[in-house]
Each structure stands twice: as C-alpha cells, then as structure tokens.
Amino acid sequence: MGNPYEQDLDKNAANHQPLTPLTYLERAAKTYPDHIAIIHGRQRIDYRTFWQRSLKLASALQKRGIGKGDTVTVMLSNTPPMLEAHFGVPMTKAVLHSLNTRLDAAVIAFQLDHAETKLLIVDREFSGVVKQALELARVKPLVIDYDDPEYAADAPYPKGERVGSLDYEAFVAGGDADFAWSMPDDEWDAISLNYTSGTTGNPKGVVYHHRGAALMAYTNTIHAGMAKHAVYLWTLPMFHCNGWCFPWTLAVQAGTHVCLRWVRPKPIYDAIADQGVTHLCGAPVVMSVLINARDEDKRAFPQTVTFNTAAAPPP
Image (cartoon, rainbow, N blue to C red):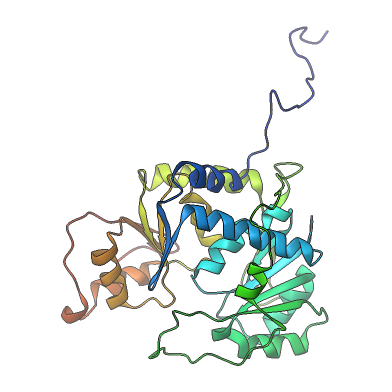
C-alpha cells in the first residue's frame, strides 16, 4: 500500500507560482521606481523606466507576431537594449538568443538557421559581419538596428551601415507601456538559447529555463555577497551564458548596471571610482588588464570591490 498521507495535489494559484526572473524586475520597479537601474555613458535609467521600456519592447515584439517558443536573436554589446531584451523577450514567452559578438559570418549564419530566428536586433558596431551572415543564412528574420547614442567618437571600431528595416528606439516607442505581459506557462519553459563555440564542429545549443534563471539570480546574490543597491560593472559579456545570469540578478536587490562596451583599463577604473562600483565579473584576463594597467589609467577608490572570476586560474 502507498503512503496514505501522500496525495497528488493539482497546482493552482494558491499553492504554486512558476519561478521566473521577470518578477524580480517588476518588484524592483514597484519598490524602488526612482532608483537608478542602468548607467550608460550620460544616460541614467531608473527602475520605473527600465520596466516600462521592457514592457514596450515586449509589446512591440508581440505586434510583430513574436510569441511562445519563437526565437529573438540579438547581436549587442553590454548596452541598455541588451538588458531590456533579457526581460522584454521572455515577457512574450519567446526565447532570447544572444550571439557572441566575436564570431564570423558563417558561424552566425548557422546559429540563425539552427535557432530559427524570427527577429534580429543588431548593434551597428557589428552590422558588417551580420550583413554577411544574413546573406548566408536560410532564415529571413525581421532585422532591427540599434544606433548607440553613447558610441564614442574615438571608438576602436567605427559604426557600420544599417542592415535592418527598423530603428530600435522607434521600434520600442511603438510598444505599449501597459502591455499585459505573461508569466511562463511552465517554469521549465525556455527563457534563453545559447551556443558553445563548437570547437571542431558546429556550435551546440544550450537552453536555460525560467526556473533555472530565477534560481541562479538568487544564488548569484549570495555567492557574490550582493547587498541592496549593489553597483555592478559589465566587464563580462552579456552574450556569455547570459552574463552568468547577472542581467536578471541585479533586479533581486534593485542594483545598478554600469554598462561597458569595451573592456579597457581606464574606463574600468573610472567607473569603479566615479560610479561606486561594488561588483564585477570576468575571466582572469580582465584581472590581468587591471593589474597591468598603466599608472596614469589607475584610480584610487575607497570601497572594496568583489570580483567573481571563472574559466581559468586567476593571476
């Protein structure tokens, strides 16, 4: 006989809610609407605005037919649209696919086809290689260009020509800030799709689900010792394992994302000193960049900064 105390209870709103990191941003926006969520150059975006822009992105995507199980691919640096995509795309029950910005056209084309990309958002820094990839790919996604207003005049890489039919800001502006976003039907539903390098073969796809992303966000706060309103510098690419889930993590404690397009020693030291950065992540090479920086690029700062590193032994 089975255990008489064991019963199969149906899941309902009284005893179960799917885990998803989307609720973290909603809570942060309602609790700390005026707190700065994102710093990008001269831009300061509070949590109210971050939430509203994510909703508008989701609404705009849905108007273009994006829904459950569809893949939205992004070729973006560590900029505000990348953060918005981590929330706006899954709000439609779609799947976020973040491309490694260092890949060549053939590998990008393979991923676009394998992921069955329906919509592609492209930073103009990478428009050249994306244009080549689109010529090789079988899929024909709707392409949207992001023209970063904070793109430096002395940038190491010039902006490329537009490859899409829409501008990102205009696309978001066409969305509804009162969009009725959706929780996942099941917490095991996919939230993102990432690819390995492929080594000697084609890249291998890896899927994250809403529950895993939500739990990783919680554990990141514990492992990194992230207190309320932590300030996080984006030295880790958000395309890499979804930035180790830190795009979702910061919302748990209503922290501040400090965007960084290129990993260079002087901007890192400036951000730590000027923005009060408390946390950052990266491979050991980022530590080496900081250690070996020229004296004129270094800055003094009073706070202790937590650096989470992985992939190889740190220097």
